[in-house]
Image (tube, rainbow, N blue to C red; front, side, top):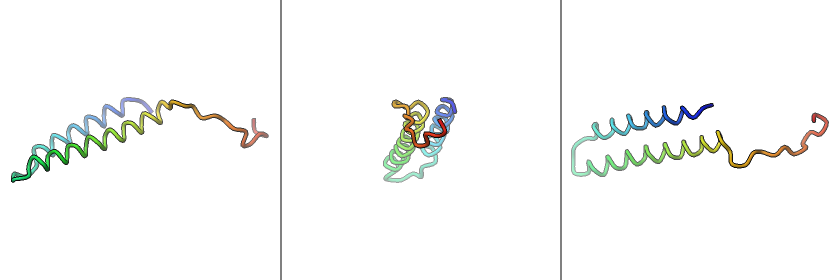
Length: 72
């Protein structure tokens, strides 16, 4: 596990955002649709990245409680 996964997924999110920006059909609500799609991609990326980093570098290390004292 490394922090490089954040960069690769960020690049994928940027590509998906650029594709959704250019492929949105023209119409009255084009700006609203673009905003919704790009904000959804950004929010999903941020939620994933925060969860990934919380597992990669936990603030509180797990404490071993003597669940099986005969194995220690």
